[in-house]
Image (cartoon, rainbow, N blue to C red; front, side, top):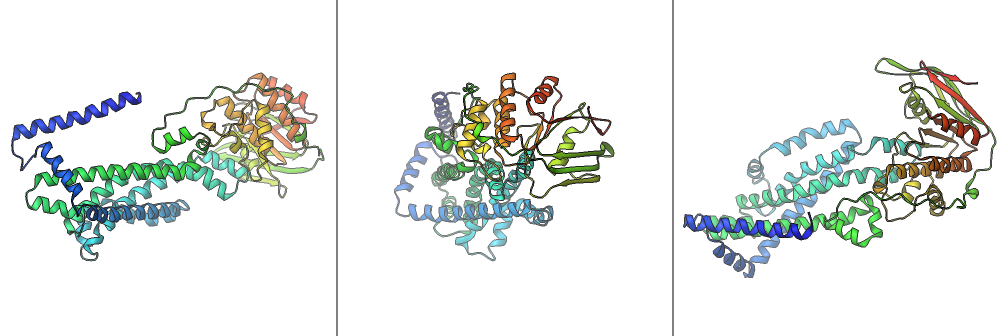
Amino acid sequence: MKKWKKTIYIVLSVLLWIGLWTYFAYRLNKPVLLPYPGAVFRTFFKLLTGKEFLPILWGSFTHIAKGFLCALVLGTVLAVAASTGEPIAILLMPGVKLVKTVPVASFIILLLFFVEPAEIGFVISLLMVFPVVYENVYKGISSADRKLIEAAEVFRVGWWKRLTRLYIPASVPYALAACSAGLGLCWKAGVAAELIAQAPKSIGRELYYAKLYVDAEGVFAWTILIVLVSVLFEKLFLALFRLLTVAFSAPTLWHSPKKLLCYVLGLRSKAGRLEEAEAVREETEIGSLAQESLERREICTLSGVSKGFEGNDVLKEVNLSLCTGEVFLITGPSGAGKTTLLRLLMGLEKPDGGTVTIADSVRIAAVFQENRVCEQLSALQNVRLTARPCTKAMAASLLTFSGIEPAPGKAVGTYSGGMQRRVAWCRALAAESELVILDEPFTGLDEEKKLRMLRLLYERKRSNAIVIVTHNASEMERIRTTFENVRMYTLSDQTLYEKD
């Protein structure tokens, strides 16, 4: 829906409800029960100009806002602690459930024995918001893409990059939802606590006296004030939260001030798919990136390796020795265990029998079956997301040659599948490595792009041990004509056979 249409509908909706209020007030004709809108608005503006208005508003705001912020910090810290291990989550669960299920009125009455009336709004706001924050942030951390985490392990990405590029971006949407729900909840619960506790200089106390003196206009006026302050506080806080977290959740927006402003204000619309970048000239310099050393050495050995899942054998007595400077081309029917074999090589699975021996300090780069890119990051940031990031110039050169514009303001999540595939390729090619593992790497690429990526693989990684899984006969033939030392294997009946 267009913005101007949405604005018109909102205005019409407000006018409709005011009209209904006016109609029923005149039909009932009992201002003590349902006051007229005009009288309520006059009382409301009278409140705004009263001498005691600002101290009352400030008293409630400080206590409720303080309770919300403390709940946000406490819920986040405990959610992070719970995500480190299931025992901690189980230990915290009873307390969280207790706070979540006990009625607000019961908490207020119990706390009156231990807490000063002036502080009751703060404590109740904290207790009501804490479980919302805790559960949402915990879900957010748990929702972090496990496949991206595996890719980070393979590329030996440091803990700080994992935190800022994987876990925090996954948690931000959940934390935003928790803040949105918690901000409304804390005002409702906080004002109710002030009313029952008769907290001095608070909106709750004013509501109590308005009710006591049968001042329906005052009750309605203070209620309108609570709604307005709650909505304004929510809008301002969420805008500030988005601004503080945009560096993690959508860093590419820093390069587009208009989009950044829309995102911070919650007006950001879904980004459409970007068009494929135009192919760049073949003269792009990549020769200087090549690894010249072709010294061969054994870096990995599989001896009698077996692996099964749920009682079914996937691999049986597999033997394989990987040496640098050689390409190991593996084929086989679907379900034969090719991906399982690669996961064993990357250390993502442990064998049920036999041994996988990898030489000390061997670094691995990989292109997985899935693209496994961080969609909130730019292509440049994705390519440099490795243990020892390459320079921006080198990453830009790889992307440009692959046919992708290395624009810092474009998030990879807006790219087509083929473009994301090439970003995954460039990340593997940019990483320092002695072993490169490619699982169906040409999926989603046309013939021209396949040639480009194969050329980059030869220029960058020909001194590595390279393991490639593919079914395509033309791809296998192209690999054999590109590299000098290619060994071909077929995986069938849980056993790996070398082809002559």
